[in-house]
Length: 376
Image (tube, rainbow, N blue to C red):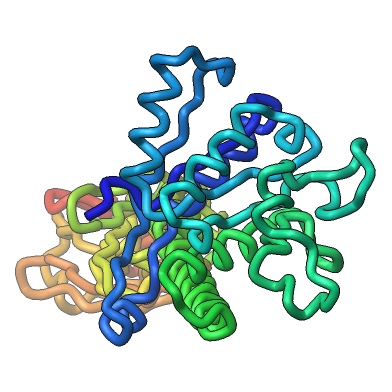
């Protein structure tokens, strides 16, 4: 039983590549279906990677040899640096002496194997000695090494491909099958992340839209019939009742547009209560489906300038008198009380009152105790 999946051997100049390879392999998760089918673990860990000074003393070398003995595979990080490293070469010889020649996995990070040129040769001398170059290139496939700089691929894709080749070699899996499953998983993961990103974007957009407030433009017009002889509207108190607050504002003239701001957008299209009140006009209290542009009408209170009420004093038979208020003819009761409503179109702020041959002025609105005493 081995303690480590692999011992990573490298020269200090290649430490960055060694650590990257270690993290890539240890963090890789094999497809769950493949693990069940082939009875292999999902994670390949731990790997042993000694990161301190490679100029090891005798005592440390014994410790490293013990680590090699506890490792199932030896991964050799190959480059022109490692090709000249005494430490890397001695490690290969020791691993072969353990009877594990076929468990050595070269990973080329720089240089060319079997180049014959010291400047570019990446295979350590011990590796070339135990695996001499074959006259038939097809017979070299098991030792030509896994190249992280494979031609035709980007650096990241070549590195991922090399990592999968190492995994396939260590677990004795078919590389093409593993590569296909990995591509399928990456596509599914990409689709899943894309859908998640879309969902998050939509959710954030909805949250943003719900957080935004809208402005409702409210216009109030005077309902027909209209009468320009009467005083114009002085102010209109507006109140909009939402679930937890009341929006209040004031319009200063009929036909003006009022902007009710900071309305949550959820109320648009919903029924809300809205009230309008103005002097001399009938109050409006209504439920309406709120829109961004809203128009309502207010009707004049017909009794303010139209309710004529006065009493005639001094006539023996006031109910027989000829009475005209403005353009309207009226009748008094036997007690001399005149009580009538003038249509809005004929209303005025004051009326000329004619009782037989007597003329007087009645100012509106008139009180209940208005009295007219015709002169004899």
